Image 1 (cartoon, each protein chain N blue to C red):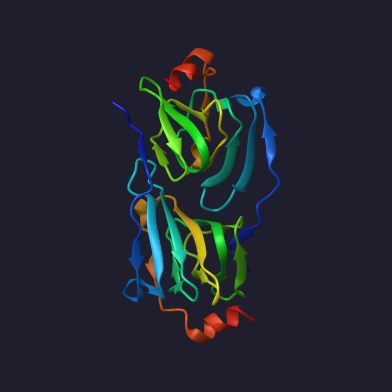
Image 2: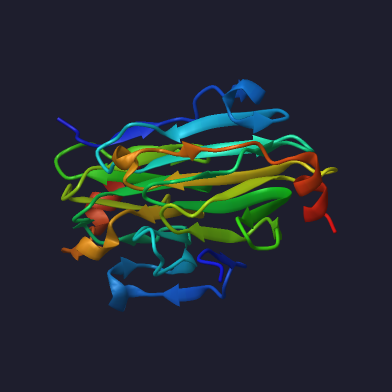
Length: 135
Length: 135
């Protein structure tokens, strides 16, 4: 019996403010629970959308595939991201990511060792913090 | 000081038969050594190119982004892959992947817990095995 799983891209789901986001975010889970304990999701933020400040117990990798957005680590200036950029986020580093005000932003979100926990969610990114990212 | 790393896509490198491939394969390492111990590479196989039979101590995820190719697990029929497909490969499962005879094939190769070892390489996929995948 095959121990590998081949999956076509599944349905996308719309996520909203109740789920640690500001604005509208579309999530397509490309690899959910699987034997590698590493998940892969395709995430599209509509313009202005971003997630709350958060961290990952085992870190995260972002591979930007479309649009323009920001990544900001707590205590550091926001950095602009474009298609082709990759971000490696160390375990327990507090950060947020999201679209610019006028562009969608799509990245793959890769969570290794997700059995340690997917994310620890914190407070929203305020409008003031978000505007500062654009300066 | 920032503990995250943002990297634009680096130069691609051409890999050949001496490195466990048949045909020509282009590898762009999007996330190499990093604090998550998970690497991400963008891999493009030219038509007819494929890697040798191999396995990964901690498994692997493939996210197909362009073209058409095959994934075959030892003892199972080959399965055709298209953009949008994802393959989760359990630890130590012997397999190969590569392009069809007439199409390029591009996937992200995600290797979680690569500190356990990236791959254990075995014998080449013979022309007979490769032709059988097309039937």
